[in-house]
Length: 318
Image (cartoon, rainbow, N blue to C red; front, side, top):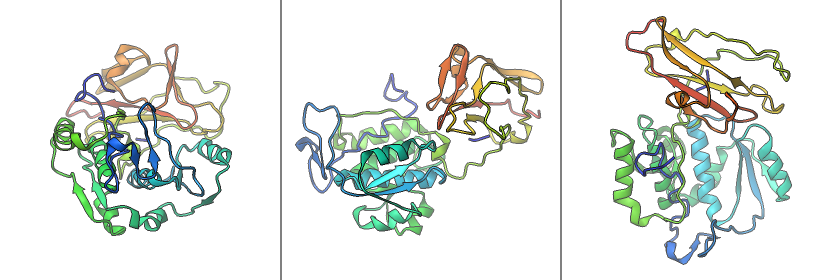
């Protein structure tokens, strides 16, 4: 097992990009210039300087905390001039885009060496609270404002990054975190682009341990493995919610997992029974990512996945 926004405070995640173009180097958001990029009035999206050379690094196999460190580093460094290109999709798409761009690049074998290379261009680190995942979104906005990256305390210490904001233990829930961000920093944030992103994707949560339940050992492209599969999740009890993730074992063949019915029993009693795409599914669909629906099936091809969350009653044994 591998573990928007109708109302501003009801969203699963407030804009992780609230301030990707926040003022830097003393420049004002009203000027339309942020570091090296330009975002004049009337443009939906900003334009960047033409890249001259890129440091390309594959990060799909890194832990979530290292991925978020490097992606926020990329955002800060590329604001002045595109210099970092991260490959994260895991299905060769990012490599194809890189090659198609015709921009000269150097493949970096150690992605985290980029932190050291560009250390002088960042002010420090924002530490989020793993117990309140939405602080990842808060940290992203603060990172844009303070020219910082997001890091765990351990990573900040490892790379000698001063902690410019520590969000651990400060909020009881996501609403506290978002209210604090709005009340404290809203006037300083750029309001031209607001995006809602779920902060709870396990790819951003460090130290997540997965247990493989089922996995094909060779590509299957004829639906010959269509069947009812039963998994015993009792070994995962006692840690709160149980998360079940479906992803493509062979992302390059275009034939990922497909699910038509889900039933979950706790001590013999049904606690979940639904078909994908129905209202009943929404109570359990924790992270749809880029999965798709076809009739009453949910499927995930390539680098996409989907996750269901189930809450067994206290005391459940089986």
